[in-house]
Image (cartoon, rainbow, N blue to C red; front, side, top):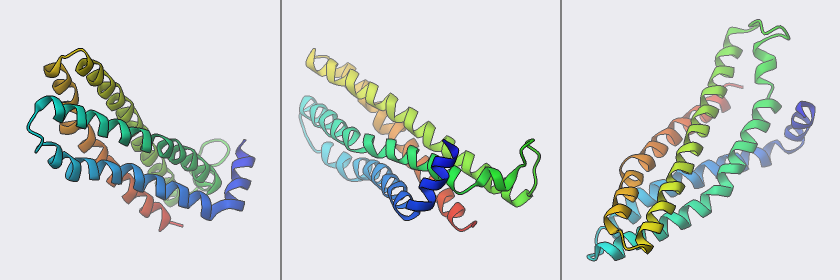
Length: 178
């Protein structure tokens, strides 16, 4: 599998990097648009029920748009990490560090990928909360739906925006490292 990923990256470097970057842009950009553009529009809807229904619908659309990009981002990240040989440049077969700078870069790769995985787990939790809120709306529990959705807007989306910006910055750092 390792040899396949190395060859795949060697043959399709530009396409893989493009899909990785565009996936990050769609994911993080979608959350930024939702938080800073759509959210203020939703708050102008006077009926609490209609507001919650619109927020739930918009979150569902956002999540369905970003999910394929999250998968693409993670797949391309693994292909790039292996294809660029970060580990091979940093440690020998026994795991001994052979180059301090390469090890520093290899550690950045790990940090960046952990960030994307935390973001993916947070996204899964947001989807779960949104689906729970939708069920509560159908049952007529507006207060429960509001509580479920509030956590997404107040904490979960901003957390993923912040983590996404950090991961993108680390990606630029990695790009400039080789």
